[in-house]
Image (tube, rainbow, N blue to C red; front, side, top):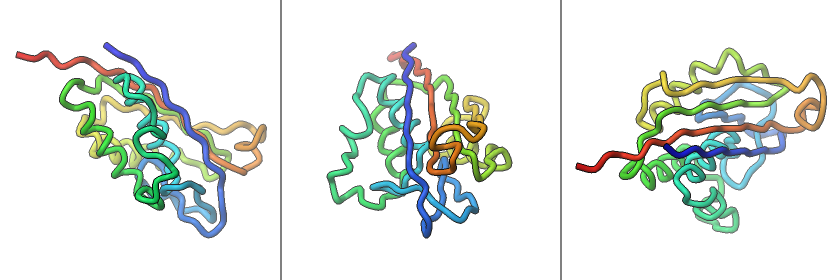
Length: 159
């Protein structure tokens, strides 16, 4: 068994769509980033790579590479899964999204379904939590959104 943790944060910006976990969430702002800014998928990618001992998202998909400018983070997650699927099974995923607004609880089920499909695992292996910061810090002041992810990988038994 191998465990990895991931974290990401992005600033909210007017005129962009908000995508979290591959799901578009209706809101008047979106996340600023080199890619589509999907803070949850970015944290999840870092957790997967960390558990597999493969570095971090910046090493595989650098924000200095124009090929990743505006890219859909779902594609980055699929590429990450291709790196680990031959050696590891995903035992479970636990995620926390921290946002004052919008309220994300109504979207947790859709996010779970999206991630399960992208990763090729059952929804029962994924947990999504949505939290606020009670008005504290940059997320509490609605300046950005952050996410944490923990992944447990199990080595595949080769026969």
